[in-house]
Length: 425
Image (tube, rainbow, N blue to C red):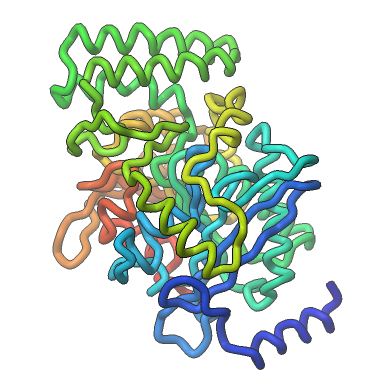
């Protein structure tokens, strides 16, 4: 795109409206599809900030990526965690939109409202996910060039924590090479599936220490977990993936259906399980997305909460660790990297996250280890702890499970403000 064409597009946006269209909900919005590979489409939905600013671009752009893989950001992340409306379609007073522009992306291809055609295909590994995302982001900037120079941050959850480091590396290199007019500043990896085996190996000790299994239960879970560890050591990731499912079943058996996402919640037998997400929402979210959102946005595709096709395509890559990519972010870029974990999460438990951070080898690792672990507070209440040095911070979040933005929005706000420098542009 030439500079003159980009200027004319920007002028058209300014003349038309300072923000976007009326979609579904109280914000000004934009949405659309990006073709990232032949017959392979990703859907995105932008909510412009409601902050008291003269122009939305006076605040940064935050991308939110869900996990699964195959769980929908535009659905689950939006309505169940941090968007302008909650699942009862009431205004959420802790929405991130009050502070920044928030872009929900149904990623990887085929997730949510996204889809593949007859000649399309799902992503098969993390690198292909990152390549697809870079294509999407280039398309997004062509459609909304006013965001090209605005600080960009990517926050994510669960399997999103595995995807985001490589996505960030692709974007950073592309913007340094002049391939994309982006201004990526940092990432927030929430309860991230960065080192799957570190999570799996700490499930049984975590449950034993909480009194949620006895010694026999502990030993039964560990017996299965060691098999997965051995498969990882052989780099047999497909076998490790198969074993992961069996270990989850053993955990459920020994705990009588513990809630994997918040160990304090009451167990339930009626859950929809795909990947790292279980849907407790019944048909409520599906009704919102298919009966209300789709008509409002003029969409004809059926929305799916958690897509099994996306998940199964990534099965052979599911248990592969990406610790080295987090190291690479810290060693080869100037991006801020924040890792945060809810203390009540089991699926990506805090002990497992602590363990993979111990395995990191970035150049300032010793200096980070020497930093003091301190509590952080919001409105006089201690919401957790942080250990920080230069570009890297790890946050232990109190009173939160896997979905930190929903479980402890005050603690999440603190992290957002720290990473974005109080939403500075």
